Amino acid sequence: MPIENDPEQTGQSTSSAKGAIAYYVSAHGYGHGVRSCDVIKAINRLYSRISITVVSNLPVSFFENRLESGTNLYRGGSFDVGMVQLDSIRADVAATLAKVEALYAQRDKLIAQEIAFLERACIGLVVADIPAIPLEAAALAGIPRIAVGNFSWDWIYSAFVERDARWGELVRCFEHGYGKADLLLRLPFSADMHSFRAAEDVPLVASPGRNRRAELASLAGCREDKRWVLLSFTSLDWSNDALDNVEKLTEYEFFTVLPLRFLRKNIHPIKREQVPFADVVASVDGVLSKPGYGVVSDCVVNRKALLYAERTDFAEYGVLVEAIRKYLKHSHIPAERLYRGELCPALDLLWNCPDPPLSLKGGGAEIAAQRIAAFLS
Image (cartoon, rainbow, N blue to C red; front, side, top):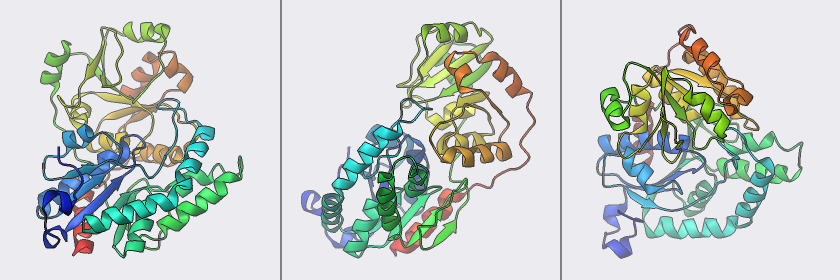
């Protein structure tokens, strides 16, 4: 596994590293990582001489599973908190505040640390999806910087200022950091992103998967002729009673992606290493999830129906629900019914819902790659 792009350790010359990018990816869920991988993959394909160091606390195996090129380098690092989750639906705002305060107490130290890395690795461009601290470090180092995203943390956290005034100073810190970006590549399903000085809209970056239904049926030991539903959660607090209710739905086969696993005969865990997430989405009939950028994008490009539960204390929820109503065959399941495993009525409704009124143009990964390469040059 390649690690940090350090010329002193690898024997790489300064001149050969001038085309290097440091791509910082938030570890809040997998949505940031999914879309970052699509952009990085496009850079790898279109500009093979550009070296990329991915900086994130998402597992390296996650990136290696999605990125075809073995030339990318990986370095651990966390520069934002996102939202502390009780599970995939519920957030803990108080715990989030404590963690963001702790992170920003180390802000000066982290900025100095990243300046040293950027200079040591001869980085020519910083891309951030979408922590702010790396943008500040790049500005102080005199390195061009691009942000990529559909929302920013100052916008998310501003919803909590009335609850606790301590959020106000943190929001201002993020606004300051985002103001250092030379350009925002603004993705679809976007929120108010006023902190950025310049923005360009790009189309959806997600890539469709490949239908591997027969292979999945063999791996899971299940039948192809039933309705297949992906349970797209990183965690879901189902009691034994809830799981009993799900297991009674014998006309369905359910799938999870590890580490989420339930020991029931009609719920089948899939390893990302065996079948990439996008291919799982392409192979099922529908997806049950909370609204998140990654899963909504995957459903749009794979034209899959989405059954979604409400998400608490996350401002992006309303923006994504608006997108779901425009671009997806969809239905809503109340969270209390989801937690009880009472899925049947909502699933029955999902298959009979009308097709979406609008479609969404793709190709954003290639456009983002071109803009990033242009900045680097």
